[in-house]
Length: 397
Ligand code: ADP
Image (cartoon, rainbow, N blue to C red):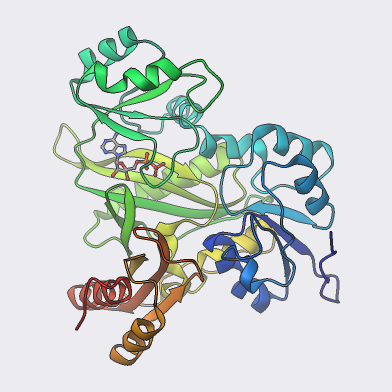
């Protein structure tokens, strides 16, 4: 494996396992900070590998490849949460500095572990249960009513691994897999179906020495389980609820000893007294799609902040630069030729910040995002959605 070229002056090398778009979006901030990135890439054409001089190819679950990669890094962080526990443990034994640590990361890897811990911490969650048998499912639905939301504790993303079950039979396949080696080894996570007003994310960063910084709470829109839009700060959010969820996210970061960016995905609900409240959906311990707006919309974006945090550098100012930032995801359409649409979008709206990830276009795949900042929310939403729709090929004029 080639050794990454270290910048002179005592600057560290940050290793990132996984070469998806999140690793790619760390490349610009790393260059600006003067820090060298080395990225363990799933392939030479993976999103981040295309823009990083040091991107050795190796799988995140190949122990030898990961250990060899980590030897050349001062600190190692992640593009995703799929590195298996035994690989993380071996890295820790080998003396690799991991941020977040395996003990923290497990709460983003395993939704049952996360639910247990958050419940112990007194953080509000949907009513939930672990189900191993049909009888467990029937008993839980007896308490919360049908339908129930069923989740694979491990390996889910973008709504894959989430099922709205109307009756026990809907979970027959999953129940049959419980106990066998796989994502359902320890059972199925069942949750009540939350009647939420909207989805929010409280995104914070925390460094190993305990400094923390919080961006304003973000509103997110999920379509078919995939994030399609985010607005920061969340419009018309009750200030008391904003403070409560930010405090909850900082408390989770501290209690779990999270290092780097932590995104706490939330549902805004109305409590029995009619007041705005929240329940936590899930945790991500890395820069998160809901925080992409901070790249253009905040003094310090989440990718720069993640690097500062994992290096235990002083954190940057998370405050927004303008009243609102609206981010729309660009999902792949039918048309594989993007470049002419890209030129059109730039010409039509010079204020739109277009971020593309160098990924092969496939229908529904996240291939980029667009952010616009300003104060007229309706206009910003229209501009962001127009640009994203044009790049996807669903808008033609
Ligand atoms: P993933 O890990 O795939 O992102 P999530 O647990 O975030 O899965 O669920 C995906 C989406 O499904 C959420 O963004 C939300 O829209 C919906 N969802 C998840 N859990 C619930 C729930 N308990 N009640 C209602 N909707 C839910």
